[in-house]
Amino acid sequence: TVRWKKTSLSYRIAGRKLPISAAKVHKVFRAAWKLWSSVAPMKFRKRDRREADIVISFHNGDHKDGSPFDGKGGILAHAFLPGSDIGGDVHFDADEDWSFNSTGFSLLAVAAHEFGHALGLPHSSDPGAVMYPAYSFAPNYELQLSFRDVKDVQHLYG
Ligand SMILES: CC(C)C[C@H](C(=O)NO)C(=O)N[C@@H](CC(N)=O)C(=O)NCc1cccc(N)c1
Ligand SMILES: [Zn+2]
Image (cartoon, rainbow, N blue to C red):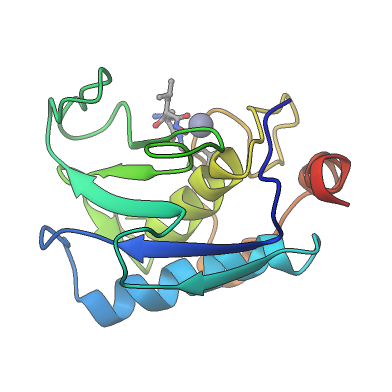
């Protein structure tokens, strides 16, 4: 299993292609990190310096990392497992209708899922898990980690 050797990680939101207001995106990402840091001894700090551990960005189609996006629907985002350079980075498909309410794809739900991958978590077979492969809409206030998510992240970092 691949995991970070340190418990304090920095993340940077790169690029200008934010589909929605930067303030809202920052708020959603902080909330998504909080889901994981509330059950594992990890700290996540936003850093604007280049050498952040985790770089988060939005891209359309082929963005030269070997895993091109596919327009609306289908692949929503992907993340690289812990490691240097691109390790831990998270890419969101800029062609999706990202949203904070009931329409479109919930940026919070997808971020929580991708951040799980960035911590080293694979997909989980538990349909209620944030790490379940397929997206299922839940209102933001209802989004929470399943027992399986907690067990899996504590297995890595607990
Ligand atoms: C093979 C992977 C690159 C697929 C990609 C994924 O799992 N990224 O982490 C992905 O975007 N999967 C879609 C599958 C789909 N279109 O239903 C997804 O929704 N993943 C993100 C997601 C978001 C929120 C919750 C869950 N369970 C999954
Ligand atoms: Zn996934």
